[in-house]
Structures are given as C-alpha cells and as structure tokens.
Amino acid sequence: MKQEALFLPTIVPIKEIRQEIPLVATFRLPKPEGFTHKPGQFLEVSLFGKGEVPISISSPPSYEDILLTIRNTGYVTSAIHTLKKEDKIGIRGPLGNSFPYEEYKGYDILFVGGGIGLAPLRSLLWEMLYHRGDFGRIILLYGARTPSDLLYPWQYEEFERKGVEVLLTVDRGDEKWTGNVGVVTTLFDKIKIEPERTVAYVCGPGIMIKFALRDLAEKVGIPANNCIATLERHMKCGVGKCGHCVIGEKYVCIDGPVFRYPEIRMLEGYDDPW
Amino acid sequence: MPILAYKKISKENLLKMLEEIAKEEELIAPVEMYGGEALFQPVKDVSDITFNYVNTLFPPKQFLLPRFEKILTYKKEDGELKVEEVIEAPKRTIFGIRSCDVEGIRYSEYFYSGKMFGREDLADPHFMARRNNLTLISVSCQNPAPTCFCVCCDAGPFLEDGFDLQLTDLGENWLCEVGSEKGMALVEKFSSLFEDAKEEEIKRRKELEDEVLGKFGPYPAFSGATLRRVTEGNIPRQVWESLGERCIVCGGWQFLCPCCFCYTVVDIGDENEGYRARIWDSCHYEGYSRLAGGPNPRKSRDRRRERCIFHKFSWQYVERMGRHGCVGCGRCVITCMGYVHMPQTVWEIRSAFREESYKKEAKVK
Picture 1 (cartoon, rainbow over the protein chains, first blue to last red):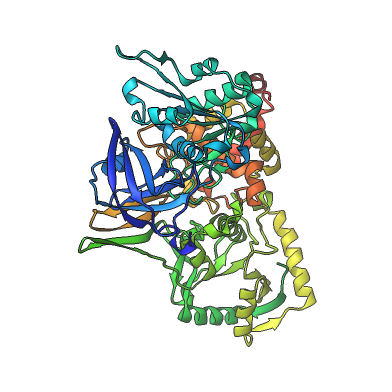
Picture 2 (cartoon, rainbow over the protein chains, first blue to last red):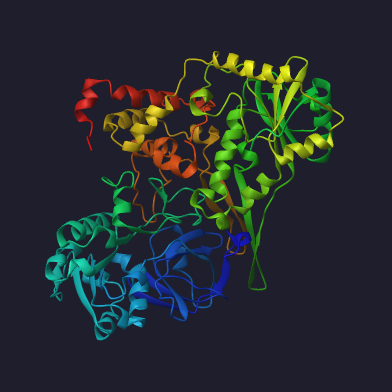
C-alpha cells in the first residue's frame, strides 16, 4: 500500500449480498487491482457520510473475490445493511498482521469460534482446505447463542465433506436442536487430540477468548505459543495512529489483531478485560 | 545530533530575522491575549510577540495535529464517487517554543512517523508533511513556573538536541545553538545578523542551566519510581478508584498535554457530498474504547485513568517510544479541576506503598 493513500479508500461495487442469519449478511466485493491479503487481516470499510468500520476478511486469499461478513450492530454497520447490489462502498487495506500458519504444516489444526467470531477464522479454514494435504486433522469447534445464530449454516456439510470435523454447540437449544448445549469450552472434553502437535486458532467475544485460551493451554495442554487468538477492538484508523484500539502497549490494528497466548496474557488489564 | 555551531545574535537583530521570516512563511510566536495569557498565534507584526511569559497556555501541537482537520473530501458526480485526499502543510516557523514542547513534538513525531512500530511505510502523511515544513526556534527556560517539573522528566529546562535553533537570554544578546541542518541553513541565510559566540558565553549558558535547576517549585514527579510500579501493575485498586472518583472526565489534560495525540474520525455531510475529518479525542471519554453494539472494555473512570497512566508511565511504552509520556510542562496541574493531575497521580501511587491500609489489599505477583 502506498503511503500517500494511507487514509484514501478504494471504491468498489457490491457484487452480491447474502443474508446468512438474522442481522448478519455477507457482502461480496471484487478485488481491486493488485490486491492480496493474508488470512486474519482486516479491511476498513467506508460508507461515505456515515463513517468507517474495521471488518475482517472472511474469504481465503486463494478465492477470487473478497467476502465480508458484517453484523448489523452499530451506526455504520446498520447503514451498510441498507445497501443493495451494485451500490458503491470504500475499502482500505488489507491491514494488520495475519494468522501464522505456514510454519504449522503437518500439524493438527483446532479452530475455536464463538458467534460472529467464525468470520475471520473462515478465511484461514478455507485457505487450509485449498491446501488440505499440508495439514493433519482439522477440527472446528463452534458455539453460538441459539441454533438460529449459527453462522454459515449452509457450509458445515461442505466442511465435513472436505474432511473437517465439525462440532457445534449452543447456549440455549430449541425443540429441534439435538446437539450439544453449553459454552464452546465444554466441547474440549469431547475431542481427542495430541496437544503437542496441535495448533489452536480462537476468535469470539472477549470473555470467550479469555476462557478458551486458558483451558486450551492449561487443561487441554496445547503449548501456549500455539494458542493463537484474534482480538476485537474499534480500530478507527487501522494504521496505528488514532489510539482507540490500544490494549496495554499493543495497538491491535498494527501489532495485531492476531496474538499468541503468551503475548495476550502479558497485556495490561487482561485479568479483568470485560 | 550534537550542537553544530554556537552563535550569538543581538535582540534587535533577532526581531529583524523574525520579521523576514514572517514575510516568507507563517511565523508562530507567543502573543499576550485574554488578560495576560501567552498563546501561540500566527504573527504578522513582530512587535506583537511577547517575551515575558513562562509557558504558553496551549502547547503548539495544533500546528502539527490540528484540533479539527479535513483529511479527505468526497463528491458524487454522475453516479461516480470522487474521493480526494486533503493535505494542508504550509511552511511554518515556531518561535519561542519551550524545551518541554520541543520534546513533546519529538515524542509525537516518533509515534506518527511509524518509528514506534518499525513501520515507516505507515507514516502519517498529514502529520509528517507539516512536520517537515516546520522549523523550531526554541527559547530555554530561566524562570520556571511553580507548576513546572521538566527536570524530573528529562525534558528541560535546556535541551541538548531536538530543536533547530535554541536561544538563551544572555542579557544583551541571545546565545544561539544550532541543532540541525535546517537550523544551520537558517543561520547561513541570515549570516549578517549572527556573530560567533565567545568561549565565556558558552560557559555562561552552562552556569545559567545550573542556576535554573534550583528554581523549581513544589511539584516533583518521581518518574523513575512510578515507572517501576506502573510497569509491574501491582498498584492497589483503591488508588485508581480514588483517582477515578475525583476525575470529572473533562479531557482537559489530554487536550493540553504535548504528549497526547489520539484522535477520532467523523464524516460530515451526506452520501453525496461531504468530507471526513479527524478531531482530538481523549482516552478519558467513555466512548473512547466502546465497540459497535455497546460493549466497553474500559467502562469505569478508574479503568480509563489506569489506561492513561499506563501509556504515560509504563516501561512497556518506554521501550517502544524511547521515553516516558510526560515532559513536565505542568499544564495538567493548571487545568485539572478534580485534583488528579500528573504530579498528584504520581504522588498517590508512591504514597500508596507507604500506607498500611493499601498494603494489605495490594496484589502481589
């Protein structure tokens, strides 16, 4: 990215909008010229007149388009949800660091997601499926509040067909739900893994990240350095200038959003983050 | 950078030089306003400049990071959205800036240039364009205010580097230390006004510096001791709660601090035409860390206070920024209505370790 264009968004049209679950939709955008990203990076999405929001990229680098899964929750995102196909939107990025994964070839992979936190993990999950032979087992543990809040419901079958072990859980089931009930950390007892050669990627609400990382490192026994999480903060500028995303001495937009457990544990205020 | 040259300039010649500078570019200098306060203002007539001030009410940071700044404009024309970046960077000289503010500018520059992250490709184009067009003529302090504590913060009263020219009042003349290539070019341009400084005049400057050190008031900030305690993070919760309770979240400290530089971004206009602007922000405001949808990692005032002091005083930051985030200008002492300014905060952190009641609750790591 050129320095002159640090705050200048590129304008792209929306190619397709898919309503995933209530309040969450996936926006398909064409890649601007020369655009490449790594799994775990994010974009600053501009809607002029409303503002800019950081959104993680949910499509893998090998995919031909950019997919952004956005939940209708705040001032700008609610305006983004009123857009239609062919409407113009500004993007700036890709920004931030990315999931380390090339060094883990041959490892077993454990994804732990909660709620909308599956969106950034999906980018890496699909990238691994494009190179399925390089990795051992791939396990996806995913939890949401209710069965209708489970993100990408149409895709679990495809994941399983491609050799991903998918385990779902919900906080509150309904009459049709026959699966696990409980928070996502309760799924850790249901899987048998070799912790020494496993790497875990975690994303979800702050409180979930905290307990998932603790249990993975201390109960499941995955080496702390192989427990990797991507954090969520309001990154207003995305390039380490405005200061809003800071935790301790780390700026989530430029030092992160992906951190390893030992780094996260050292952050100021981690004992009582939310 | 070491001092490139020692020069001297008479008081009349200095005004002549400033007059010439004011013709060519924007000259910013302290002007007496609002019943005796000195403020940095653009000056056309050099007779407006005041030399009778300790420090200005505001630091000159708004000339690098304006309170309100357009960063881009957008306009819809025939269905096509046109976006243009706006960079406003006139050539400027700031005269009369004090040592603490020079140090504050250096601190901000280290952050905005991306050097803090080792990412100079992500330097802020707006800030850096203005910084590159800026010349600093600083004036060393000989009469600190009772609120000043730069001696505790390694930021004054005299500087070794960071300025383009540093002036010291020697009575009839100004001693002029040249601290950069930019300063050297300025001295060469006005070489008829300058003379070489004599050995005893350079010695006199050192004597003056020693004299000033004895004049500081009752507001010491024991940076070293505080730094260690903030870094370890074992300050009793009651200290933060007591500070948070008294804070009225006015944001005054952050807006007057030469080392504070957070901003927020807003779009002004509708979807067809308007501009995007950035405005100063304060980490003490409740909305600072709030995420979309409402969750707030730093909801209580004491959490936000803790966050602010962590930025200013932790070794984690010193390691990344090269110095701690206070230059001892004393502006927070003047502005703070809740009596939770920097020296007071430092004093409370220190004294917490003396009082038995706090000791029992202190978390031991």
